[in-house]
Image (cartoon, rainbow, N blue to C red; front, side, top):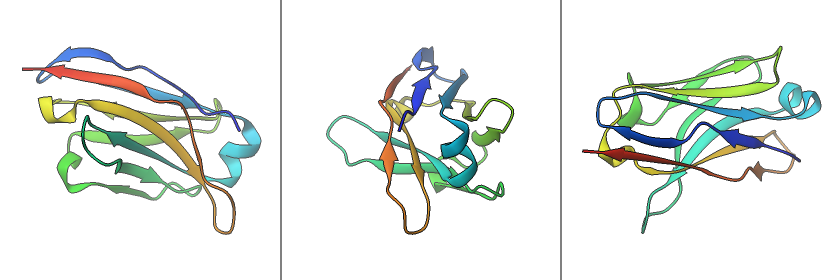
Length: 115
């Protein structure tokens, strides 16, 4: 299963980034998608998720600042990140899953927010 994440980088506090996670049509149409992140010395945590039907959930720490979306024409999931804070610094991972099926994580993309 290929989950190709991209879009990370270095940004100043208050800035914006948009992460992308591209996959195959088969994976995209059958799986819920999510973004997780892992900061240095911390456990991996859920940032946002979106179901096949488009229902979304967000971690409290990112509500109102980060938006997850999915583009069926491109088989891609996005994470629009606005008003970034230094505490958002982490490696961000794309994840796909479905009930009764396997869970896959893609390779991470590093987001660094400077103060």
